[in-house]
Image (cartoon, rainbow, N blue to C red; front, top):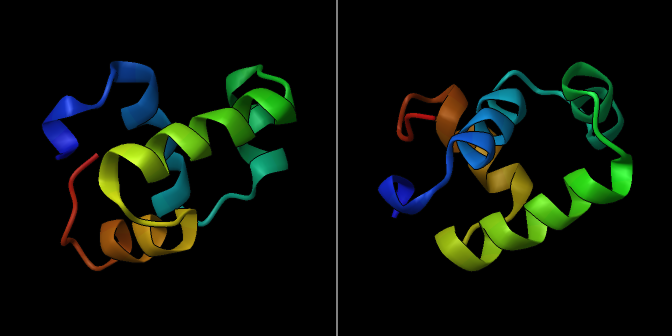
Length: 65
């Protein structure tokens, strides 16, 4: 599942794992908040997990960005 992610999606996953908000991710990556939200939709479709679930999985070491 995670191997299907693009490099940008993996970056978003890593940012989620650090506990960053949509706004924080957008600022860190120079994106619009709407773009980050769209990445969240794609990540949910690809992984079957919400942004919060992804963040928790990364933080617990269950998911590598």
